[in-house]
Length: 181
Image (cartoon, rainbow, N blue to C red):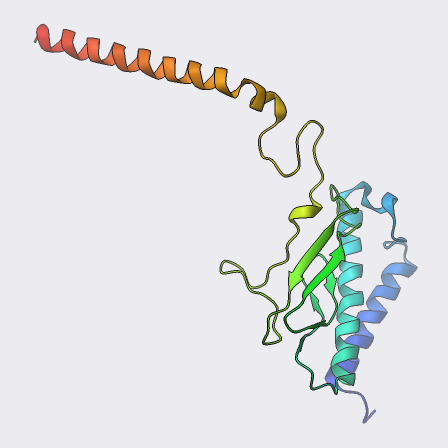
């Protein structure tokens, strides 16, 4: 019992929980069928997090390296491996999240000081922009569907004519009100 640390007990507890989930059939094998509903997705995220936390605890216990690097981290979607300082970590987009393009990559920047990049608005930041699946007829990197793009000039002309007519009507109404005051 002397060799057991707080981290050792925590890791053991996490592994027991994941084994119980596997045993009662809540967790299934990874694959495309896993993302059928949000419950399966939540269960898979829990399983992924448990696996990552287990790896984090193992690496914390075995850490003897003085090399400057970003430590393994769970970002609530993926488990990012230890990365040398100043390098960009790149992993395939997660297959356990619905509506994600798994043929693309997500990235996370390890800074020169051995810490992960922190976005000014968040505690940590992962670039998932390449992971978004395109919706039929919509370019995934453009927020404007092609149908709207095709008729944008006509819509803008109608918009301007409408505002012009509205402004003209308002001016006429004010002139009439002033005249009959």
